[in-house]
Amino acid sequence: MYQNGYQQYKMQSVNTMTRGEMLLLLYDELVKRLTKAELALEKEEFDIFDASVIRAQEIVQYLQETLNTEYSISRDLQRMYDFFLYEISRLQAGRKKTVIEELRPLVIELRDAFREANKTSGI
Image (cartoon, rainbow, N blue to C red; front, side):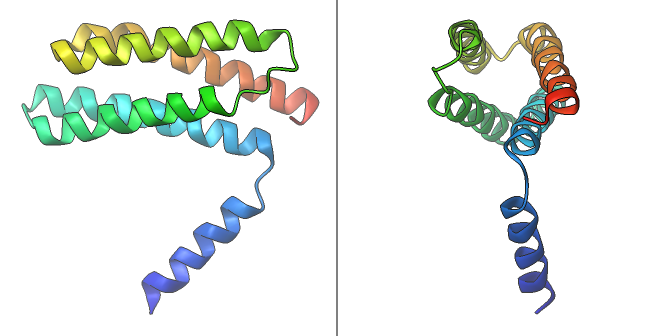
């Protein structure tokens, strides 16, 4: 019973979010998955690592697929997402912590830029 109520609350929260809030939520989740992958790699928990990396990849693919190409910045974002996907594939193949250490700050910087844009323009 409790679980069902919590699920309904989560769904209602997501359904009432603005596009900007949803975008920030996706970026927060991407940062979280990269951090989780890094911790799993340190502990040699490769199942958790693989699941986290796959989820990070799915998030970037979703961001890429839903990109509104009407804006000039979309081209730059498309290239950035391509780069993120390339780095994530390197991470999957090599399981190197340095890839996460290089990628996560870029994701955080982009998230923070969207957060600031959301504050000023209400995306």
